[in-house]
Length: 274
Ligand SMILES: [Mg+2]
Image 1 (tube, rainbow, N blue to C red):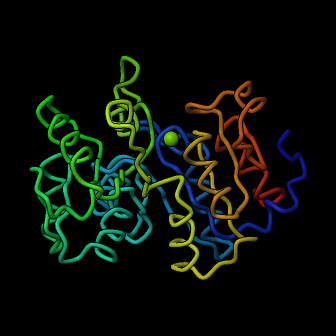
Image 2 (cartoon, protein in one colour; image 1 turned 30 degrees about the vertical axis):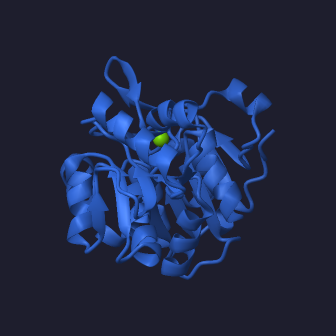
């Protein structure tokens, strides 16, 4: 069971927050989120927002946080799976042919950064990238299958999330789309967003805090909590999104702390200074 000793929580300075289901849902900020963020400012800490949503950029999020949550943030505080993918491709595949299955706006963003992107099969493809794709067609799935069958190009994807919450329930996310390709081709992607340890490493190097001072906070065990574990930092699950208490009994991704909601986490961190 997660720890009930909060002394180490009071030492945390760098907080890596998931957004949806953790500090907010849609346009609604959860009670306690603003209190926790201003507490982190007060103690000289840093907050980063790590999200597997690849459809929004850091600039989009700064605007949304201001408009919907009345929170002032900077672009550098947002680490999205789309951003992690772009960084990875620039570091490893600049000047090479990259096959992408994703939305036209995602592909445009990659092209604007100078990457060479193709959406059709060709023999010189250096890697395959799959993203959440709200414009997915059967033709695209066939073309991607062709690439995976006829080339040895490494297979990457933005994020393993299987489903994405909407007002009536859920819709398929990138992990479910990759599931179609994996059962068809037998190939498994390497995911570049959470739970990759690189997400934690980027935030550590940007902020200058140590692993001991860092906490990952999220609502999904196989992305958020797994990301903290992979990155070697402590983790906290909140039960305001996907994970439920019963899920903690049988998971390889065990958080160090568990709270009902972000307000409870704030009170545990701030203690008598709340
Ligand atoms: Mg979430």
